[in-house]
Structure formats: C-alpha cells, structure tokens
Image (tube, rainbow, N blue to C red; front, side, top):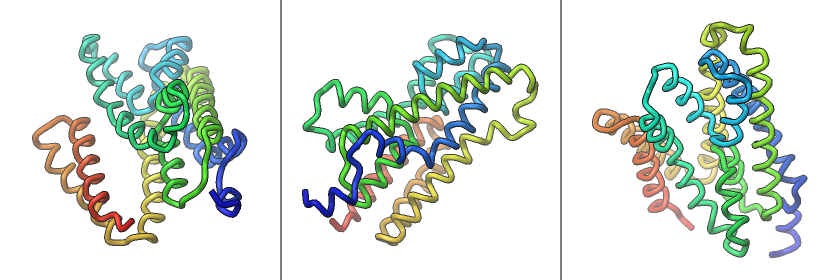
Length: 238
C-alpha cells in the first residue's frame, strides 16, 4: 500500500468516529422516534433499551412494536424479525472479504454491529478506493451502536408525553434516512458509471414491484437486492 494511498484513507478508531458523524443525527432522530413508539407500544424504558442493545435494528424494532400491538405469536415475531434482518447477512458477506486477515472474533464483531448506515459508509470507502483498517471499522460501528442505544433511551424518557407519534411524522424518520443514504451513494455511483448505476436501480425497482405480488415484502426486498447485485457484478468494468 503506497504512502499516498494510506494518507487518503482511514486507519484509526478516531477516524471511524469521524466517519460516523454524518449519520449520527440520523441515528438520533430515528432512535428518538423508536423510543417514543416503544413507550406507546406499552414497553417500559428497560425493555426499550434492552431491545436496542440486543436486537439493534431500526426497521426490525419498529416492526416488532407493531407485532406486539397486534398480539402476534412469539413464533410469528421471531420469523418476521429474522426476515426483516436477513439483509444483514448479505452486508456481512460483502464486508468480510476485506477483513480476511483479522481474527474470527473481530469478523463476528464487525458483522454483529453492521447497520445499513455503517455499511453505506463502508461501501463508499470501498467505492472511493480508500485504505481502511479494522480499528476504523470498530470506531464506525461502536459509535453508531452507542448513539442508537442512547437515542432510544432518550426517546423512551419523553415517550409518555407524546401520545400519537404519527402526528409528528416520527414514523417516517427511518424512511427519510434511508432515502438520504441512497441518494448519497447513488450520486457517487452515477458519477463513476452511469449505465451501471441506472441499470442496478431499475433492476431492483422493477423486480421489487413484481415480486411484491407473489411473496412477502421482506423476501421481495432480499431477492430484488440479490438481482441488483447480480446486474451490478455483470456490468462491473473492473
């Protein structure tokens, strides 16, 4: 690795913290929203914080609250949350080749704390051919993890004062953040390879719409993402 490339990269834990900062406001907003939704789903503050620490998945935690309100069975809740979080398997498989020289424990840690947002930051670093280290990835993931737990805790503390979270648009916070991350990533890919970026987006969009008529939304998202990856791999000019 050349010295010039190392300078244009991320090597320390502090670099990981700095790389996470652009997404911190998103974590705070979504986590705060979840804390409020959790309280209004009849969860107490301890249960909300424990769920954030153990489940650690924004979309799956919102879904879980809805299932609890609908009195869904434990089996149904477990299977639904598993399907919603199944995309993390794809993200972990994508990230793991870049850390082959690290220990198994380190790779498990990376995969366990990887989120949509931290994966987007990681993907951007890869796309820009940045040099990065395990310490950088740990700083990125741990900062996000702590921020999420604190945000949901704060949301839970004020949840009793907001009886209708939807009234303030808090249910849209997660969607808004994903949209922002997507636009940032798409803009970068578009500048590199217009044909590839547009082809992947069209493939995912069209396949998702079609699949929603035949399978559940979670399965449709996974399959359409795999199809998008396939098209992107075929069109990769490297």
